[in-house]
Length: 463
Image (cartoon, rainbow, N blue to C red; front, side):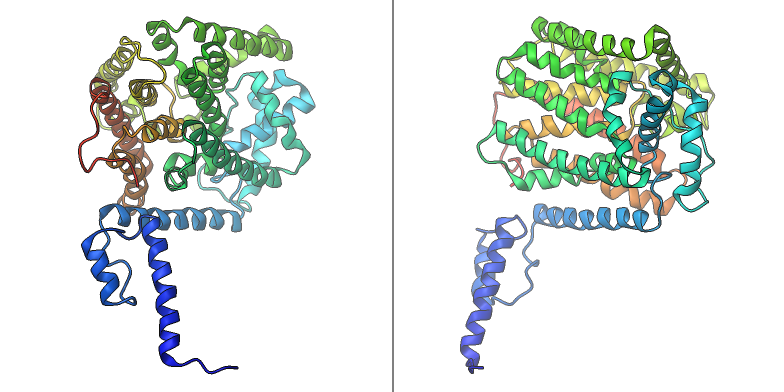
């Protein structure tokens, strides 16, 4: 082994450290051009790397810590076997619906007794015989045509199918966000994409085993089609949101106000085909059973509905109703629903071009308003909000403070609330998301009026 003089070894160490500092600066963890940073490098290559960090780099570092928390949290539940109870609670009904459709036919999917036949044993075995809450079956609210998507799950046992479902959703999410941003600009920005993947709606979607990645894909193709002037195909993609039809309650009247008739025609055609396939699978009586489930969900007859945990005005009424008379608790909620819907629909009156920055704010404001005003909206259903934020980021129209506010407030507030009051933490984080939805709506209204003006200094998009 050859002897390396101390001076040469120190030079090698300093070159390695300078390369590390450059990598940190490139990823936003060190200020690259500030005088303080230059002096920092001149004085000593071996000083602590985080002393000169500004607010944004610290927030970036915090997101990395948040990612480690998500990973540890998920691995803990997988290791302890809590897969079909707390983790994957919604996946339980998807898997059960696939088994019911295969064994009894699609019409039996909406029979509570059949759902209970499959779900109860999985619940009992999910955490080796004990549970966080008393059992109640989770209904399937999807049209029969969409239940076809769950049939491939039967190729694997329930637990393995959940692991594969989660992995597939992660893969589809990352690949589609890359595809969406590449369609907007030549080179995708992995910095902003990684931040979005660490958002709370992504985490809760994966934890519950939800289908919101499919919503995001349909919404993304709808946006891209309209930006290319392909309104009719855009409407076809929009019909995919019938998977959770409540997200369309403001988009359809908005498109009508915006006189996007070709988009509505495409939606009508695809919706007709989806309904026709559903009728073939279950018949008219089966569709009536779906409608009956919707009515029960509206009145919260099933405990798994949990309106107090949602991120909408209904959640506000449900929580206020615990301390106020029911009629009084609903007064601000009803007023809020009406005002939110009117404000969102007013965004469409100007009829902006789909390629303009204003249209991105119309989409952002409408979906945020939908999350606040629609009757059944849990936190994970806000996942498609990532798309208008990415669109506006690519156009240089959204402040980095807005993106970080949406990313950090629920992510940081939830563990703090959980430490203070574990029983109410889920309720309070839902109300926090309601506040964020209203903020995004107000921000969109203000920016629609000023999209011709550049962002103020210091408000540039995320670096």
